[in-house]
Image (tube, rainbow, N blue to C red; front, side, top):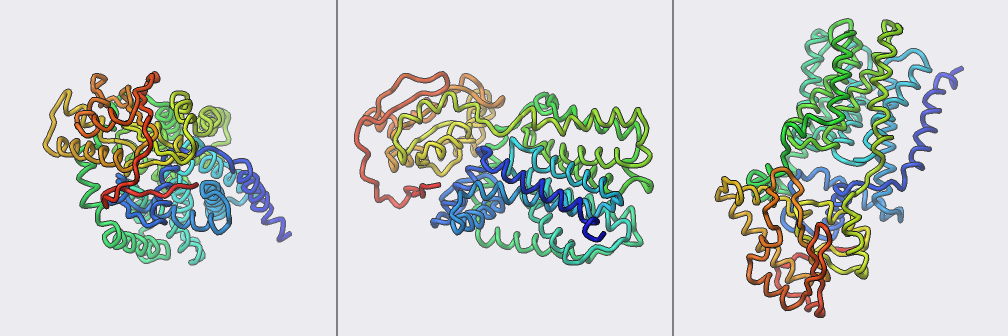
Length: 508
């Protein structure tokens, strides 16, 4: 009978293993491919924020280094190992949620684990491996832990310590995420003041992680503050969307429906509410704050909100007072929305490939390609997929929308004008240093902040040295619908000895 007690966990483990096999070869988003490109450069001696200009905090990039290291030791592609690791992490988070949520019924426990796993691992399929995806996985287990604490039931200290460490990693991926553990701790104090203790294994783990991470950033990535943040303050607002584009999204409909369900049928907060439902809703509210603060309206920013509210609804529907026809039917309909969303969206697909793949496919592997665009999807993951070399410190010229807006519409502050000159100079250096086989300039505006009249090619050709270099070494080929194409007609120059030239490692 003891073995039968753990039958749900055994069955669930089989599902997780099967999912690893099923997801092993899924395509991964351009951001994740760039993350692992940076890890490759760091393993070959590059310094983040000096040799590679990145706008995000370092933790996500640092954490890719051990994955690449282990992948090399196992002789497997690092991105495939990442898929296995995240799937396993999602499985462990669901197992922890199932055990800590105190579901007495084995069938109920299995259902909770399966729903958790689906919403955490399959739900974000398009954005698999993104920071919000990882944060969701770490947050669900932590929400179950805090819910358990509110009941006064015991939690093994080692388990709490591990869950706290994992949650700390997830919460540290973006500064916006810090609100989630703060809200959960305040809720725990309000719900169970007599049981609350500030020093617990999970709070010790999160506190130590936060301290070590802060010291590491100051010690090993000071340029994040001195170089990165000034650029972000000057130009990153160019990626912001209108409130209409942020609000008129399918996931907003899902959130609204589920919020309406809880407002109608109750069970969200209060002493009589299931504590796991309450903590999951707090997780959703915290990440909802992050979604609106980032002001992009992008799908992956919505991932932890959709996953958390969907799971909260699923747990609520499993409670005894929900065994009525009307709330059950309405609730199952609403739950079907986040559950079926990944089926509708599917895995990652780069819709720019139809325009750029025919251009890149003409080049032998190893050739460098220079792409002047504010949109990273022109180069990523396409350049890596074609085995070509990326000669730039930048993922993309993400400053272009803000620069374009400043020049065409205004205002155009000094910091933005100086940044424009800086990236023009950097482009000239990278082109001269790498002798690209192909130079591409974007012909379209990708973001609402970028005026359509702004000429990206003209912006870079303002520099006489870029104009002269193109005239001497390139032929202006027939443009595609969205790209100006320049093909090199002279042999590549010997690599300059200028120490300013960036040197990047190729390979997978």
